[in-house]
Image 1: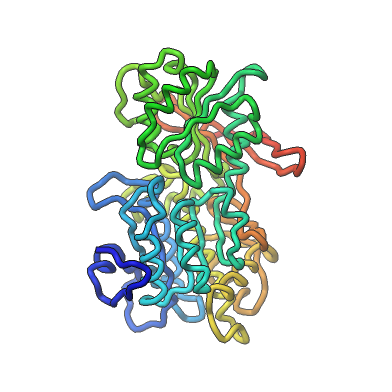
Image 2 (image 1 turned 90 degrees about the vertical axis):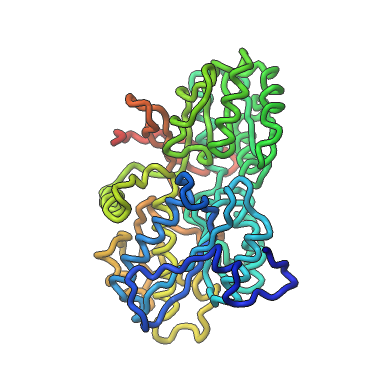
Length: 443
């Protein structure tokens, strides 16, 4: 059963019990708490791991570390994770709106973690009017930059304006200046934003084709692309949609052997192991996603993650560390908001002001050993500069966005997805976005 926006959401309903789970981590009752919500598109129990599954684990690890420390004004984090039971490529529906209302009206949260662009767009339409802050993990749509959000929508992953430049750079490497590139994109804020970003770089070389968020129209889009005379094929969609494209292009001789590229939506760790028929190989796939070369901080984070989650590698998903970083950022923002002499009311605006204090000052790494130092500085009203496991989190105070490098992934010697290199991006205004290869030896 779903509740419409005009109906109340009674406490203790099947709606909440079925979709939301509270995570304390340390299990100690009776301590004052900071309530944070999260809305993700998780799979049913027993289903395959998705990006959202890894994001949930990243949040849980952060909560466990923060609660073990208990230095945020003597409080611990109570995280309520609500599941839309949908995939990011089909998200953004009424369930998302109802879950936001449940978290705000029944759980009293003032900050909510979200994942992909569609659900973030939908969630902000309910959260912002209520003065609640959103922190997006994997929402990369260009549209989020220009939202009239009262400074309440933040994200740890950068706009696809930059990913589009990197993806265009990678897809055209070795091609002639006039060679065309066919782009097959899902009809969603994510797909539309990346098509726009790719078009700014590829211009007249790009031949775009779209398909529905439910996968309908993929065969028709592939059939249309077969007449483009292109030299490369780019897919903007989910991993399942990419597999559907692979199946469809197997029957199109002009497309079957083209080099294949995708954006981060399909860049999941098991993508190369997905079953495809003969002639539909994914072996040539190269995909892009936000990320930097593994620092020592990331390697230590990965070891802690594996220890907590039965040796699962966080690198199987592109946004595991972003979820971990986002949870830390909200906790640290609360540390500033709860300082002595701080605002009388802790709402989304107060948390946003705390987030603005995380990009200037003494530098700290997001790790358990530095929690007390970071929260102490913030409690005194000082700003700090944080280094995340996903990279430097230098938030733009006006847009609420953090920049990032980009990683390119493809088949390794063992046939599994492995890192092929890294790129930095520079916004040069009217001159476009510069894509700069980084001289880093992949691990």
